[in-house]
Length: 182
Image (tube, rainbow, N blue to C red):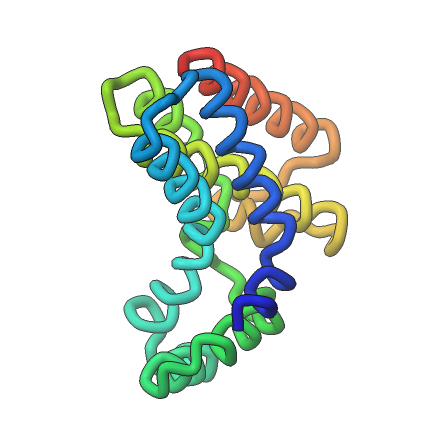
């Protein structure tokens, strides 16, 4: 099962490793417990956006085919099957709550607030890793599927190429600011 999870989430896990190394280098942690908290927080951030599918299946549309299938995998403790099903049916959902521009903006603001506060290293790594992974998911949506309409579903219309470039630049600026405030 671990091999399948690594295969499905290889780039997200790579981003989590990058975030862990960056946070550990910028904060110069020497306590092994704090180092472990940073690593665990970054790994949790790699999977945070996939909670969207669980929220959708159990709370938003539990009677849909997707919801029933996810609940069935959960009831049978078939987490490998659940990960496979979500991976191959991730584009069946149109209005995602966590994989959206609105949540991404909230996550960007939260990353600046959490990093500039006295929050734990776990929380800092979690928020920054989730933010970096949301940026990756937006890029994946744009380059792989050539459509960001599902990402900007809450707005009247999706931005054009120039608007998306400006939006991405703002996200990168927030990320740089977050690392600068560590």
